[in-house]
Image 1 (cartoon, helix red, strand yellow):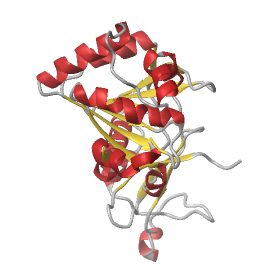
Image 2 (tube, one colour):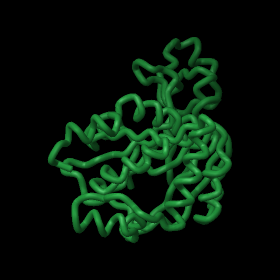
Image 3 (cartoon, one colour):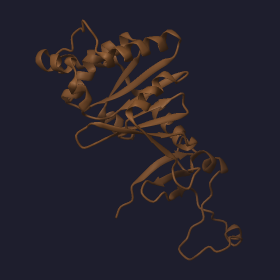
Image 4 (cartoon, helix red, strand yellow):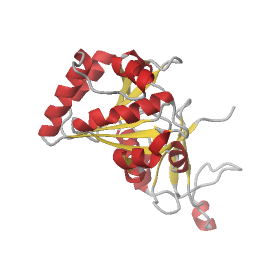
Length: 255
């Protein structure tokens, strides 16, 4: 069976070698780098078996990118505790959205208006969820905290993605900063198909969905190597994504 390998990180920003990968099923770590080639050096190695190759890696590579625990420390929380994270962060909340559909969007009056008219439209009254989010985000942005998102969009955009593109003007009005990226560009950058929030560059909340695109639970991770991996994803996505206003203008009638 083919391994499911995830790229953790590299000690080189140019050639990507040496690097660390992790087997998502077994937890095994795969390191590749330049071989230890000098025969006098190789001769000093103990228990080097036939067929094995010694490689040279900087100590920082293992410190930065190798898992720190034998098993990844994940704490699963329910949606109520997940909501509370948005009242506790101190500086930044950053989101990567990669899915083609979010079933929760389809339960709102906004969705029904969008399906009927092609536009989300204005709310005369916000329901409890929208009111809570609106009040919370405005309070954060007034105090200088940042709420940012990168949303991946297919070509052509799905109905759910077009809804989010139109609804983004409401989020931006609350002070959020939203950028978009075509999925082809995300694939070219090797961005993972993961949905997560990164809070204060120290806590990652992975959103888990069922086969019906319903959010079921959230996995919290604070392991440094995993947090740094997600921070690198954030930096790459944020750099290459296009501000919402520009993205939607370029889409034109394709919205």
